[in-house]
Image (cartoon, rainbow, N blue to C red; front, side, top):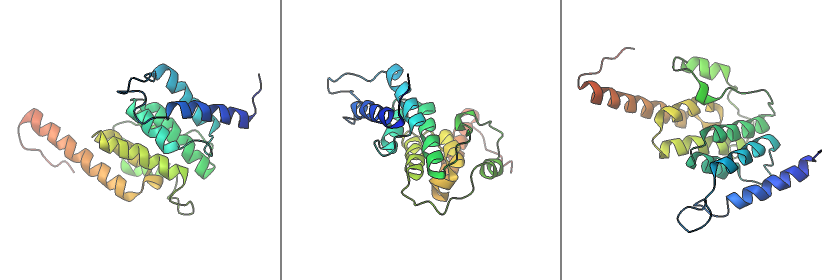
Length: 186
């Protein structure tokens, strides 16, 4: 079976319209609940077909994150950024980053700061959505990973905020566990 990109994009648009018709995704209003088994392939299809003229990527990223489909949310962001920068190479998933990755490694391995792309591009919107939703859910370690990975699109303010909140959260956890003073190791 051979599909034209435009017909597949229209089908993907129809699927996304069904998902996004309300902000609850079917919760609380007696509507049909969205199954993760059905929606995850739709997000993958969107990431592969990239029908950005038909769908709002930031809403899809937010929907994926709210349904705890972080891999799908990140896949959508990577596709949006690849479309924005016309970079089709495979990108490393932030959920696979090792704990020992340094800031310098993350920033030098990623794309250089993008200045020629408008700040309202789909790449910027997707990166802002995934970083902001991690802040909203107080997932500061994940926010730090995403802000590091998408530094060129999320910006230095989100990066600094994510680093600061991740550090504060880590220190709070250490103090609660040990009940003693925290030593500065740097």
